Image 1 (cartoon, rainbow, N blue to C red):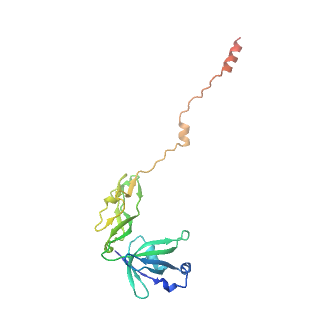
Image 2 (tube, rainbow, N blue to C red; image 1 turned 30 degrees about the vertical axis):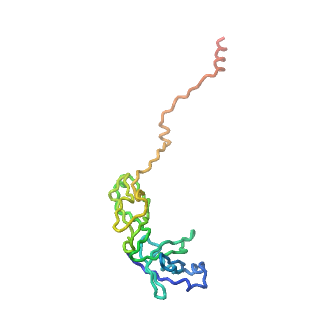
Length: 217
């Protein structure tokens, strides 16, 4: 698995600034935590965070501080502003070699499904899979090859065989499928004009019958 370095500062460095003031300066607050480790409130520039939060690849992060201390971790969560979509806060979880960890890994679709050429539609249901493994076995992403999928074929979680990795999602969950196209039947105006029409039936009322009878007298 690829590694990336994140240079950060402990939050004490900015003790005179509120969290919103930090964000206005392009500095994003975060936290480092994990089993058996001391929590560290930290902050990093948005520029330094971009390669970590704007990617579909899973990476081990080498977190470094100005005092030369460093920690291995992974990105657990990022909170974004609902309007501007700028990062507001990030969580880093500690990892230890030899200790299994649970992480979400992105799914990449590869290949060309013959079912699409036959008019089918590719339905990608699971974009991430939750896996459990040792840190050294964390995949950057998981490739799903659809080159043998025809219409009505699918690949489920149970179809994947990953060495040294346990997938925690429901084994019956569909990851990707080729579904038939949806055809809506609509009657056009032209079709409506060609449709046979029934003759109009005019019924006589009792009053009409009486009038006709009077005329004969």
